[in-house]
Amino acid sequence: MPLYIKDPEVDRLAAELVRLTRTSKVDAVKVALKHEIAHRKNKLPVRERLAKTLAMAKEAGPMVHLDHKQLTDELWGED
Image 1 (cartoon, rainbow, N blue to C red):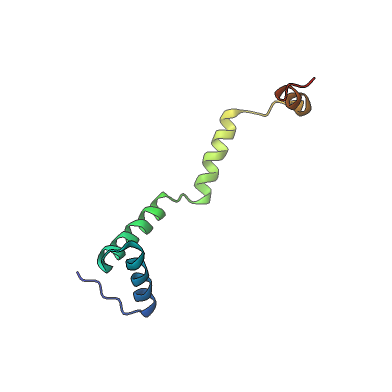
Image 2: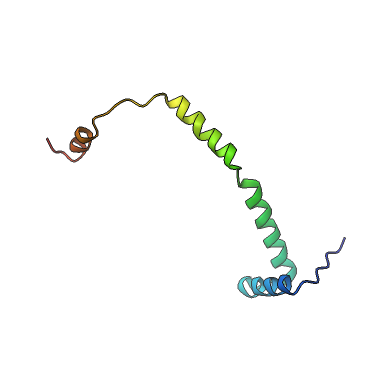
C-alpha cells in the first residue's frame, strides 16, 4: 500500500535527510523509520531498567563497611 503524506514539515525533514545522506527520499524515509523502530525496541522502560539494577544489587548483597580513607590511601600508596 502506498504511503502519501501531505505535510510540509515532513517534506522539509525528508528533504534535509536526503541532503545529509545523499540518497533518495524513499531511502531516507526508510532509513529514518527503521532507525526509530530499532530505537524504540531497544529502549527499555524505566521500570524494567530499575528491576535489573535492583536484581543486581540484591545479588551483590549488603555493602560491607569500609574505611574509605584507608582504602584511598592504600590505592595511592600512602600510609
